[in-house]
Length: 482
Ligand code: ASP
Image: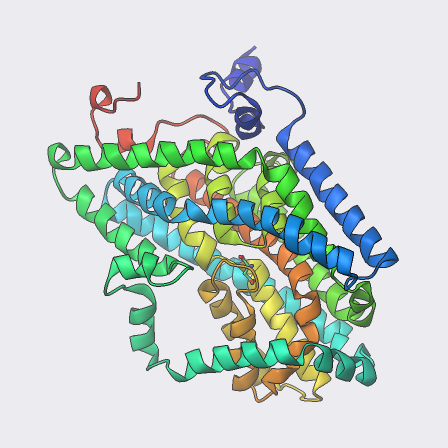
């Protein structure tokens, strides 16, 4: 009997998906229509892959019809989805972080939440890099690739590689002293430039600015801060509605994104780089299903199966967009609605995590550097491998949550350990596929961190929680949403 009551008070496993399936102006998300969202996305994914692979096999990636379809149909539709998601990231991150930090309430608790998130991220990143390097040292993919194939690949992607290497080294040569660069990386001089200086917003600058505002709010009387908090909570609610709207086109967009990636992707690459791809995928799977399952089970006290079931829409979004930033809006909603993580924890852990907690990226960076070093015949000493571990962990923290965000970082590490950075050309052809997989791991890692931090802060998971605004002290009658 009490079990039954317990179950009744739980958040639905697919509360977010039900909301998407409901009419947009319907208040009660309890009458979903048609097929579940994640099923639709999965079908989109399968259609995209099957069509792309078939077209690639029978016509070839460079066939004029394929190029036309990609350029005029699938690329624009895929980009539309991606850009719509990215479009709301800036207002969403700002509003959600300010309200979240204000909801956490006091600076000491915020410090605790920050330290726990940071500690968790460091430990898990280190584990992921060690898994990657152990596999790379055991399988030794760099010695298994045929030198002629490697030379051919290097030639095929030489132009792309030169451009990337140039951009990466230019950025590097302008980097000042370490402490100075930490300050410059985190603290903006002008927060408006952070979001409008170039097309990709500087998320770390934006987050720092929001964090400082949130902290200042906790130090002021509620009467002063209530109007600002109400506006920002309003912005948060509006972006939530926009996500619902955008996710309705997700299945079609996912089909297009997957078609783009497979139709022009040479399947021969998979064979040529087979051992490298296997090493990366094996590492990612061990971390995803081994380490995360243990973390979720022991630290969050959730059944791993149940956890993965509840977050599948987030995993599918990360897989198809290859961008942690673009997945953040969906992750925030799913974490709150399907996992019952309170808004104030989500908004801190997930937003910061989208940029700073990237276990998949760290693992990938480690394996790739080792692979290319093996290929170049450079035998790394233990000391150099430890440098790679350290740099890959930093890489996971510093890499932007955008497609191919890792590449400039890998170039930097190659230069540091004395391997020719132009070798990056060899892996560029399979980077997108592996990016989809590592991004899925990155985002899943953020959700495991959110459940861990929430539980360790005494919140019950899988239960509905009050909005952060209530914890920020905004009087209920004034919230204007009840
Ligand atoms: N695409 C990855 C992400 O957004 C970053 C990377 O490893 O390239 O999480």
